[in-house]
Image (tube, rainbow, N blue to C red; front, side, top):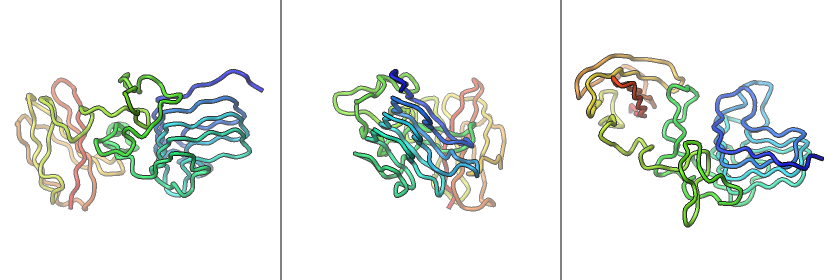
Length: 250
C-alpha cells in the first residue's frame, strides 16, 4: 500500500475524451476545489466525471462536477474509504455514486460555460450556489487565479473563488456592456476607453457566425436572422484585452 499522499487541487478540466479526474489503483488522494465540465466525450467512457476505481483512501471535497447527458458527476467501483463532502453536482445528481454529505445539487452559474477555449469562462457569477458553500477542510489557501480563499466563515466550491470583477454583471472602466439583453437579435455594444475593437459572435457549438471591426464607442449589431437562443460575444480591443459576454436572442 502506498503510504504517501497526492493532492489534486484548483484544476479546471473540460471537454476531454476521458474522465475529468480519475483515480485508478491509487491510495491516499485528496481531490479538492476542482471544476470539471462535460468530459467523457469519448463514446467508450461513460461512467463519471470524478471517479475512484480499485482505490483506497480517496477524498472528494469542494469540487464542481457538471457532466454531459447520461454521465454521473461522481462514480466509484471496488473502492474503499471514500470521503465525499461539500461538492456541487451541477447536473445528473441522481446518478452520483455516492451523493456524499453536504452536497449541493443545482446550477453552477458559470460566467460563460463552453467547450470552446476561446470563449470558456468558468468563474462564478454572483448568483452561483457554489459561493460560500464549501468547507475549509483540506482546501487550498488560494484559488486557480491566486486569489485568497479563506474567509471568516466559508469558501467557494470549485477552482475559482468568486471575485466581483469576474462577473459579467459588473462593468468597470475598461469593460464592454451590451444592451438590451435579452434581445430580439438587435443589440448595442458600448465601449469605454477603447478606440478600436474586433467583434466576434459564436453560437453554443462554438461556431463563429459573425465578425466585424468597429472604432465607434457604440456599435449596433443585427443578428435577428439567427435562431433564438444563447450566443457569446467576444471583443478584442487595441491592447489585445479580451472580453466575453453572453447574450440571449428571444
